Image (cartoon, rainbow, N blue to C red; front, side):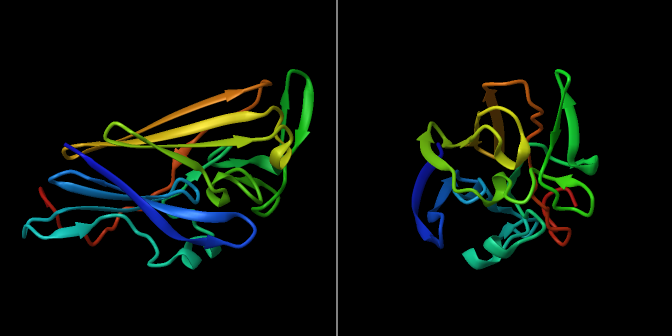
Length: 187
């Protein structure tokens, strides 16, 4: 059985309140932020039986606000680089906001990782949703996206959905970095 709880974690100037959601099973504890739909931590038992965090993250909200590595965040509309920030869909060329040399990276100057997502409890987890307006960062179409993080025992599942009003590229992913120093089960 997974317990789901949440509390306010801080404020981001100009964006609003950020909540911390906690998914807790008997084996695993997952912390999720409404800022960027970030997986802040994943605690599980190591070989010594102690709970250890296996995901890199920051201790405070300011770390995530100033982060340039997308730690734990959902990135998009498109994860990865789009060369020269330019693409063609249905014969029309689109120019995106540039944020990585001459390229557009992980959604642009203000990608999904810097937005505050709306969170609702679901069975065994939390669903976070966001609406990206038509023209956001240069992309066509209004896009409604969601990610559901659910925890069953030792299994954390992330399920993504997106719906657009126009043909547009979508490639969502979570950008967690796993802690290479963890010495858990099987190591």
